[in-house]
Length: 347
Length: 223
Image (cartoon, rainbow over all chains, first blue to last red; front, side, top):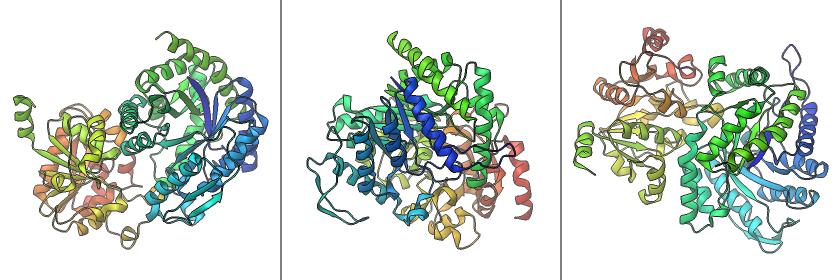
């Protein structure tokens, strides 16, 4: 089982709650990825987000830099908002990062995005939401599956490619392309039909409730003739690791609170409720917050339901201190990861 | 199907659900568990949904939209920007539960819902002009539906609001919601649905029947 982390970039806060610079947030994210690599974490995902509190708006740029500064970790987007970006550009950026990584360490995860900031930002109409997503995913796959540098494609949401070069090609010929979903059944069926590995973003409710979706995904994939080993499942969730459960809860809560206050103002989410937080931070809740033993046990337990091959956590929410993030990454890599391996070997 | 199951479903009736997203499938699972015959349809032909329905809502049937529309009660849970794709003629006379929300910060602005200050269900009802529209299920998270459902009489049972201009339709929907595991609070006319749309306290919280009545009282007074 691969163990990893993901981040949208997290902007630090002053003691009065005001935001520090987004430049600092990106520098912190870069440091966190290098630290994750040095500690032995398997995966780091950079999520595309476009807010002052989460400014990692260009995963390709971040991953290219990280590819140059790391040695073993797999790097990917978590996720790239495919509908409002240009798949040619996404592919080119990630193929360049792949070359810089030495080949084979870079992936793309394509998602719809749960918010709509990118639509006005890049001049797209929300009425085209579904068509943009479907067609651009098709274009991204067409480029990736091409056997030559020249690609031919046509659709309705962007100009056609008539035997045009899209370079560089990835070192191993193709990049892994994952499909991200928050749990809509038809997205699982679609990922299976396309034969793409699927990445579940589980940020609320009980994670084991995704078991039927994983089954739907695998059965849809099998029905479409895809080999079982190509039908991989990963899980991205909120979580935090500290030496003790008490410390983990205390360190993660202020950022969770800040995030929910902010999202509440932005999207009308419920006011933060500490009881809800505590309920989610224990099994069977959605947050993997605790000491290494508990987090490892809960990941292994979910594996019994989903059979996933990668579990990665978003830990930096709402301006948590950078040293707490780095310690959580260390514990995830050096304490949680070997425990998960032992627990799964015992099964 | 065994005889007992047939009797059971016959006693409850048939629920049609338009939309197989997270809300539609959660309601479907609760309805199957409560003993209803459940028919789910999307804009796709039934055969394309068969595997999804078999795995995600075991016990429900994948049908075409026209067949689902003929059920005793129909829940509409499609993405709101597609509400006009719901066939209004097929739903003429039907009791329709509108489980949708207008939530512009996550779904973007939709012109039909920006032009005036009607509740979103009134806009939907204007499209489904021959249906008996009841607004409910919009203020509970899809992932909360199954864990929060509880048997009638359970202490602190969660309550859901209903609003409609059709008293008999409201009664039928109230019985359905109770069977699925929630108390029901009557918020009044369809226009009162505004009191539990996104951005309100009701939308943002979890309440038992007493608490929900208190929350809805100001809007009932002004309605």
